[in-house]
Image (cartoon, rainbow, N blue to C red; front, side):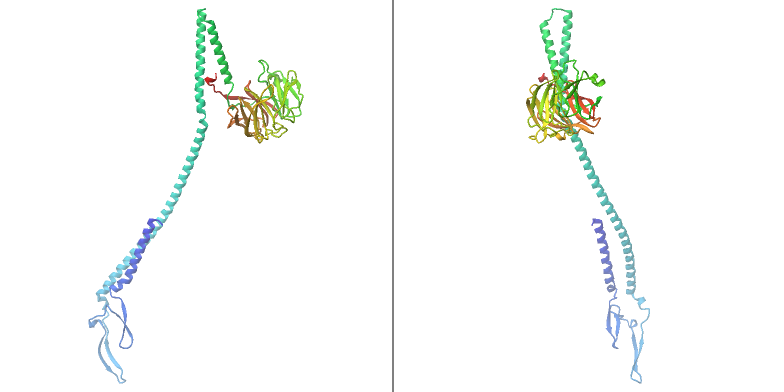
Length: 485
């Protein structure tokens, strides 16, 4: 119980004790305690020990007594005056005390009513204070939870921004390198202008060496700029609508300048005919093509044309075949040891997509899964001539959970699905043997992707989406270091 309630209880208890004492003590103080005295005739008379009058006029008086003829006693008795009590001073004091007691009793009743009212008010205020205290606790807890959520969100944002700091520092170095190239070009330009005015005043051999050196450095810089980290994928461009739900199409990233042929393969098994279109415009607007018959049917949609040859997985096997499109002969065959095939470790959409061949700036690759790696993706770098495995990387990403995959600058990118909302959310860097989870959305326009490959020459993604041939442009983040030139 709270302190105000304890105080009120003490006051009420004290008042009750005072009232009880007064009711027991006042009569004795004014002489009202009574006792029983035995009368002469065997009866009892009540008398007040404190108020027996000493004056004869204040008591019963016997004036005479005699016997009658029968022997009975006859007495003459005079009763006391009736106005004796009114003249008694102690009776007046008693009345005054009684009046005071009555006044005090009334005051106590008034005080009691006020106390009860104040007690109810205090109890009401106590309940309100408890309610306010509960609300303050709720507000405090809610404020703490809100601050915790805000802190968590800010911390997550800082974790996202922190990796960009060293990248921005490298960008500063790249900017200085570009400025240096610009200054050298301006210097050479000024030297050439002076040579035009003053022939023979400069060493041509030295000038040629400087121009050649600058040209090589610029070429190396451009080669470095061709590689980078994937940061974005554009909206899709539908090139053509043809074929079945599954298939693959591509161009040769190592084709000579002016060779823009398009290669087209419909279906994912039991087919061995490859269409050749002379150019992208022919592929878009006509059905004029040349057909090439492969010696074996292919499996899946993971074929790739690279440096004049088509590389494909032989149906129902883990054999990779290199087929020359010009001579239409098999140049090389090799088995991928332990690689799953025949729908053992396919992509999420199925379709015998166990072995996926692809190319990037660094060469030819094979993506598959093995029992030894628990069905997780294995990345192998292949020699494009001998098909020998140069090096392999075991990842921890289950191949059956991957929608599709492609490789850019030695980094394998994996999508989270093949239908509906799709995004690139896993990347494995072969140059560092590390991986990370990312979030790069792209539009799955026709809701079923069965082929997705990168072409380093076009810097674009080729996709087969539910009978539609689609292109995506990619955005790469470039980092060029002066010591690499």
